[in-house]
Image (cartoon, rainbow, N blue to C red; front, side):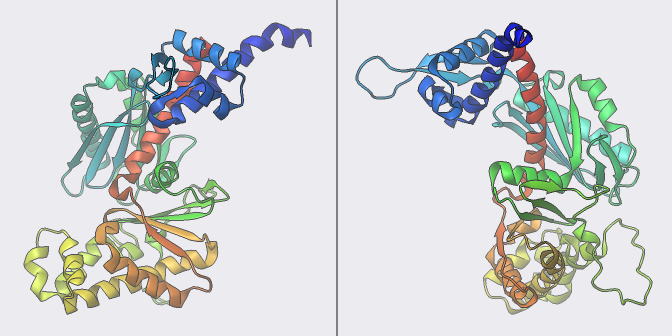
Amino acid sequence: MSGFAATGPHVLRRMNATAVLGALRASAGGTARVADLMGATGLSRPAVTRALGLLADAGIVEFFEGNDSRVGRPAVRARFRAELGHVAGIDVGPHKVLVMITDLAGNVRAQHRVVGPPAQTGPELAGLLRTTLVEAADEAGVAPGDLWAVGVGTPGVVDHERGEVVLAPSIPGWAGVSLLAELREWLGCPVHIDNDVNLAVVAERWRGETSDNLLFVQWGERIGSGIVIGGKPYRGANSASGELGFLDLVTPIDAEPPQASDGLGSFERLVGARAILGLAVERCAGLRAALEHGDIAPLFTAAEGGDADAVATVDVVAARFARGLAAQLLILDPGLVVVGGGVSRAGTVLFDAVRRHLRRLLLVPVELRVSALREQGVALGAVRMALDSAERRLAKDTAA
């Protein structure tokens, strides 16, 4: 007991400061009154006041007089200084890099997307990542070396604990690239990496859906899924769960599965964005000119307008997607499916058809929603991962 008495008050003050900081950051606009923080943390007024003083001494919090439209002296409010630092979230794909720069509250200060040449190798993609990060940081008015943390989302199998890309079929030479070590040496800050769909799930639970049982499907040229069970992400024994894109619905049982040279899985070659484009070109003669630039949006626009060929093509896409999705749903029974990625922009004409086909394939109903985050989900999840790292630095600054 005597040892606790000697060190307890100091430890308790740090714990209180951490709790108050968390409540302040969660407040609307990152500002709150002492009374608000008392309610959010359950701490007494003196404890909250001492914690705010500790945070202010560390430069993390500042005070101002609020305008609460009340009689008498305006209440003093505390504000989390989100501008104190910045983090980066990076979404890496076979053909593109998307970088977001945010402050410590997750407010986006810059966003930069670059499309690279086809068939990029791992080292080439690493170079594109660096130049895109520089451009995004410059747009945000932040030096890359001043970032507090960086999160990276990538396709493939990622060992999250070791921070290594174990397998990346869609990007030749990407697995084994010493990306994290090089970025850490260059930037001088923590750099973390995870599977892109796992990060999209993180973003969904941060900025979108909060269901404890959730299947998130990233639908673009690649197709993958992230699984949340009991409020916790499920990665699998080898961090390879949710690889929906490699589900084979077309090869006969007694036949040898074809070996793809493009790194795409069987389901991706059946209903990924590239496959949808090929199907539309084949079946919608009147849309071929509109589709020649590789954008599948004209297909869904035409279907919305009642074009018979487009409607029929979209129905084929929906039926194929529902068949693959049903395989996961029959096993997991998540109750909620959220679809993100580029194809999620197709709108109700596609997803109403997917729901219709799913009803015929499932034993119990499932709710299917389109993610409000669309194509930004992976980058936002990477931002959230970087912010978690930055929060550990804030805790250290508070302890100091």
